[in-house]
Length: 512
Ligand SMILES: *Cc1c(COP(=O)(O)O)cnc(C)c1O
Image (cartoon, rainbow, N blue to C red; front, top):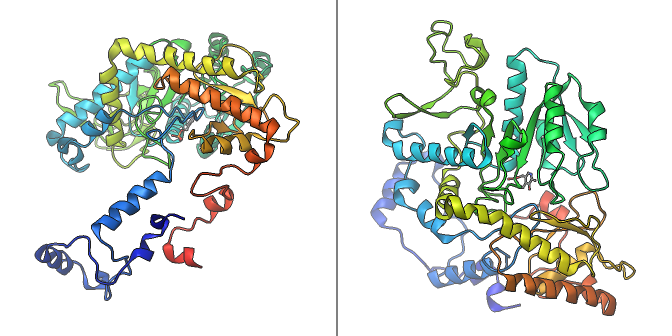
């Protein structure tokens, strides 16, 4: 163990200080607290110098793996580089100092940015309008499904309580549908890994609210029958939901709106380069086609005729509504198309989303511009196919077609050594690469899902390919080196279930 792997509490020395609070301000703020909330005794914090604190956090940061420290080909998660200019813009006091309760007249710039970003996302996806309120992809899914439900209800079509989800779908799809109170109907994939249209047809009836699809799907394959699927689902009265977490290969090339999708969410913290991992913060904006705009959630940023922006909270402002009702939702008597916010599916976040994340995505889009944004997808697709073709003699490739931005191996080609996908993932850490996504999608037993993104150089891809080949050779020559990996990380193989269910978060608990 290195000296500074010690916990900071072990470095504590009574009376040592790293920082002194100004006495007057400190006393004032304490005296402002109600007596019941004031501590009688000082908390048992480590007493350390500023230098100790700096070393503690710097060393801690090096125990983790990030996209700033190495290649991170985590399929479905799009771990692209997060340009530092995004951080500079998000940290500008003019933005960082805003308060969510400020009157709209004092935050016109921020509201304009919200509108402009929504507009850019509409242009990229081919949707009519966006809400930027949801905090994550899954939160966007829930929002989008609420919009779909509200649409059917507003038309009195109350039987539509079932939603179709492909067996290859990301786990959040059925989970969000369940949270929204919808019953999940599974549609199978065919041998080519695409939604099986023949399996879909008999599922379509007047109880279907819609279908959730990812395209390219979670196997990294383009659903080429999407036009036919869209026509079938629309014919039965259902809507199409697009899980746009995989928008990266399509930006500026293909628009989900043109494929026939009615509702979608994007993951700004994947495609639009805002940092993620460790649970957030994220943003999962939801875009809708014209016939669903009135059902987007509140608060909504609206533009008055004179160009002033204001925030609609869902209170009916229509002349045509039941007089003075001030009601929320269809109760106010407005037509379903009313745009003042009263037909919204509800409110899904406290204010208007994770503004810092929105700023980063906005900066990213402007930095790329219309022309360069079209290069993202082709480069990401080229990189994924390059890795796939370079490694298919060592790893099992269950679907050997051209992939989009990601693809799936089903473990090693030679599985006689008993070396598993988990062993390969752990061994990669020893060589300085983060593991790809493993054991997802569930269609294969040894899934290794690789997504390089467009931000990596050919040299990095070559380095990864070389190490993957080396690991495949090690699996035969020295399988134990893989089964006991990782050997170089601060911690080895963890009990991830217990870590998630019973996390030890306090230093004192660690001592037990
Ligand atoms: C990441 C992802 C999601 C969920 O996004 P979160 O922000 O993690 O909630 C949904 N669908 C797909 C395909 C994804 O890759």
